[in-house]
Length: 174
Image (cartoon, rainbow, N blue to C red):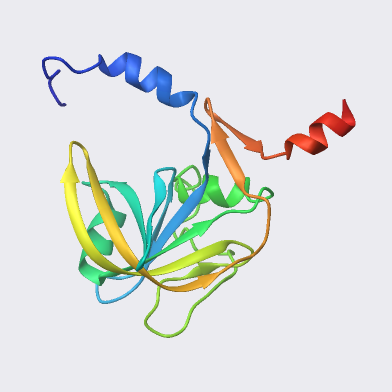
């Protein structure tokens, strides 16, 4: 457990406020000499277009963090709005009865690359930098391949999944 650092917001206030922030639901995958792994991750962001770079935040002591560092490659799969079951699977909610999170999930990838989840918008990355901040590992990757599924993303906010609906569509229905 981390101690409260003088001058920082209380942990409980930070967590409560962050629950109100919506984010795309992503599954980070990796494969290579350490093996194959995948985990649902909400902290994903574009860093730069020159060169194309993204970052993900992984719990530093997790299997996926260790595998990403060892494999030096990862894929960020932005899940489509109908993929809540896949998000739950890679979040570990099925680990009690499914021994392989990839079992029954359609994935593909060129040899030596991390798995892309069918129907997801995917960013295949080479790990450029990994740094620890608090409880998490920030993995920064140069994007080598992109697959744009052109699907509406699954979103997560306040402990539940949501659909992203364009404002014009909401106004037209109202």
